[in-house]
Image 1 (cartoon, rainbow, N blue to C red):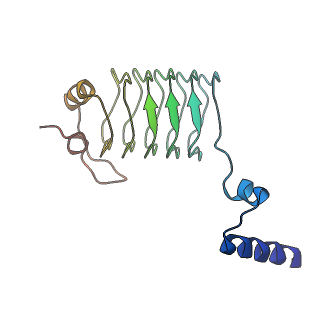
Image 2 (cartoon, helix red, strand yellow):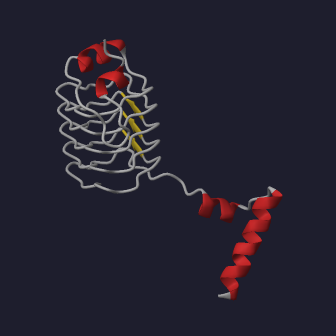
Length: 165
């Protein structure tokens, strides 16, 4: 018990002084999970904390991310057809050159995310929130054609979040 107290006190003093040793940085700021090049076909990540995880050139068809915390996650060059991202939080995520054909994006949050050069054909975007997300103009026009509902987490209408007219 006394050891924990002393360790916490030493760490607090080091943080207060602005000097953070490498071992403390590893504890306070662990490196993000990396699934670079992984074949995660059909894996179940539902409800998991995958904040800042990296999925680069990964194979993710039919992967379940229902309700997952994917804030700041990177999905670059991934194949995610029929993936389930229902109610996932993808705030600040970077999703570029990804194939999300047929994915369930319903009630997901994409606030301030980047979705450039991403294939969103046949995706379910009911109740999704794209507030301040960066999308290609073609994507926005196509998504506005099927946007509906209000996000249960943010209270923002999908059409409003996309800037549909």
